[in-house]
Amino acid sequence: MDVVLVGLPGSGKSVVGRRLAQRGRAVFIDLDEQIERRAGRPIPAIFADEGETGFRARERAEVAALGPAGTSSRLQRVIAAGGGAPVDPRNRWALYRGRTVAWLDGSPEVFAQRLRRSMRVRPLIAGRDPVGAVRQLGAARRRFYAAGIRLNGLAEVAANVETLERALAETSAEGTTLLRAQTAIGGLELGHGIAATTVRDVLAGLEARRAVLVSEPKAWQVAGSGLAASLARAGIPTESILLPRGEAAKRLRVVERAARELAGQRVERGEPIVAIGGGALGDAAGFLAATYLRGVPLVHVPTTLVAQIDSAIGGKTAVDLPEGKNLVGTFHQPAAVITDIAFLASLPVRHRRAALGEAVKMAVLGDERLLELLESDGPAIAEGDPAVVESGALAELVERCAWAKVEIVVADQRERAGRIVLNLGHSLGHAIEAAAGYRGLLHGEAVAHGLRGAVRIGEEIGLTPADRAGRILRLLDLLGLAVRPAEVPVDAVREHLGVDKKHAGGRLQWVLPTESGVIVRSDVPAGAVEAGLAAAIGGGAAGAGRVAVGPAARRRGAGLP
Ligand SMILES: NC(=O)c1ccc[n+]([C@@H]2O[C@H](COP(=O)([O-])OP(=O)(O)OC[C@H]3O[C@@H](n4cnc5c(N)ncnc54)[C@H](O)[C@@H]3O)[C@@H](O)[C@H]2O)c1
Image 1 (cartoon, rainbow, N blue to C red):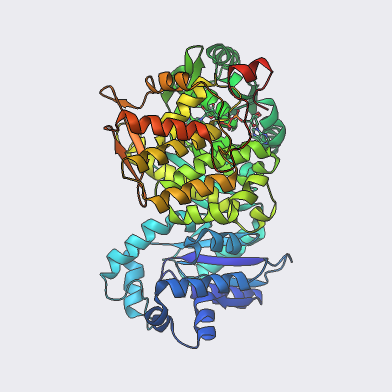
Image 2 (cartoon, rainbow, N blue to C red):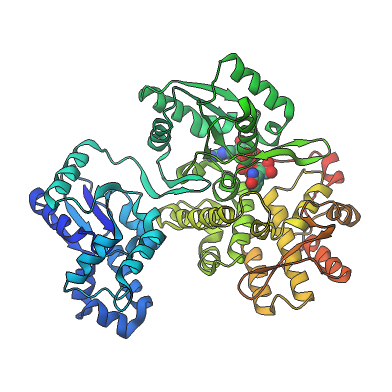
């Protein structure tokens, strides 16, 4: 068993770690000291010579050199991580996986005082107002540290060591929590193999007398039944309701039936609904939670890549009408979203790949690292290669997309302004989906078509530089997204573009790629829209074949797998 201590500079990781290791006769590793030893010079000198980038590369190498966590039940290693080490998602995966993580929390004022007295120079703080600098680091890093057991960094060293020893005796290493955040749109916990314990803890925090698990047959098989069993073992009573699989869940009559089941079970206002499934299940169960008794608490346990990186975050719930998708719905923020990437193992390749359409969108919004990640690991993620779990690439992808969405939604919860950027690729994407009669194309696939169109419009009006456009299109080709033409009637797409809901004052607002992000424009000339439409429908470089989408394909029985 290994322990990792995390926390801000001055929180006492080295002191507590050294003492814990001494008492447990374990090896103590101070990552920063290790870096200095290997470099043959102190950290401030490394920063001076190689910048923060050089230091972080050394830190990554040192984390990787730790190798896998010790598996003995005896305490083997105690690792004090540098304050910034867990910021990098890959470091966090390598550090936290299979280890007990402890966070020395405390007030930035006291930590800053300690730093003033310390001989050690901290390059990220030196020369700045120490309290302000520590506070800023704390706000930016809290979600990474909070994944661990919280200790009081202001308490006596001996008291913390004892608390930690007690915790070690009690906790069995169940899964890896990578991120834990409380946000204005609910809690977010992300990790691998964490669902059972986290759902239990979240329900306990909500003081729920019982919970209603709402799922659909496939998600129930993959995730729901196991959760129900573990909640039963923990003594938390549950009811369960199964909705139909896929888009069929998003019907008013399905919600009515489910609401009547809730009424029959005398479910009260404080009793949470736990929505276990993909985006369709989450939209329907979210709508049920938003409207039953005018709103009961909701906990999302997303089981598809679409749901984990997108739909479970943001509070949008909806059902479909014969007239169109998502036409009836409301905003209902969940109490928590519990994202367990282990559930993705059983996801069909096509669904994985399609979800990456949304991931490309998030990257194009301005996350350079996410673009690189998709370029290096995207194809393996799409294929479901287990190596992307082992390397932490899948965890990093889910975290980057999910957190970017949290930040955008927190700034604009009810889609009044900033959230519109999330519609990149969606104006054309929705129009293509609608023109195809919502059959044959998955949402992310349609978004990929829409991205190709947005890139072309951006180029036409001089907003998207050629190299940026080329990079986005090459990535879509690499991922196998929208590479073949969408066989949809162009007139139908044109018509649906006219009724897309992202209108402001009657003019369509286009989200278009720029050199490093996006811009919203409502003055796109008709000629550019036509070019975009052609590019969206036309597919990519490899678009030699033809994919059957639309009425003709429907007659031949093509549909969602
Ligand atoms: N609310 C939002 O902000 C938002 C955002 C994007 C998309 N959406 C909605 O999300 C829906 C699409 O999401 P989706 O693709 O997740 O749909 P989905 O819920 O229909 O799931 C897709 C398929 O995967 C299966 N499945 C679920 N979990 C699985 C697992 N772990 N292993 C194997 N199979 C599994 C399901 O049974 C289903 O057949 C659409 O209805 C769309 O409108 C909503």
